[in-house]
Amino acid sequence: MAARIRKDDLVYIRSGDDRGRTGKVLAVYPERQRVLVEGVNMVWKHVRPSAKNRRGGRVQKPAPLALCKVQPVDPKTGRGARVKFILRDGQKHRLAVKTGSDLGGVGQA
Image (cartoon, rainbow, N blue to C red; front, side):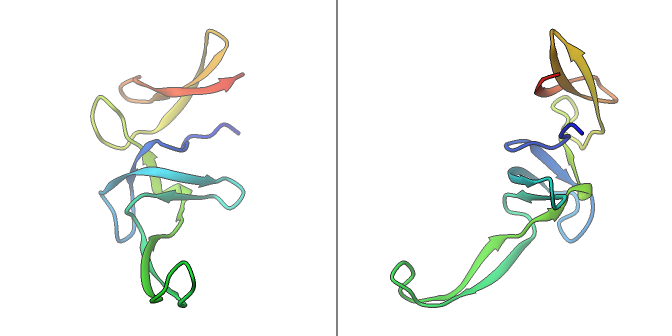
């Protein structure tokens, strides 16, 4: 199955505590159906003192979100968009359903 969300995409958060926010995708974990978004779903991690982190303490970092909770942002409208795929010039492309704007290629089909 083709990836609707890819690394470095700008995505809209559809539900949860961060609903309505947008952020850049840092990583996608397709086997777990999760996505890591910059500045969204922040959690506190308690770290021990070490050579790298002398003081230890609490560090805030993003936690993965369910893939179904995010949508790519349509460049024309700036809102979340559903995605469809078309074949153009031997390349598979992602398009926003309503506006038809290109969200980027996916690779060889």
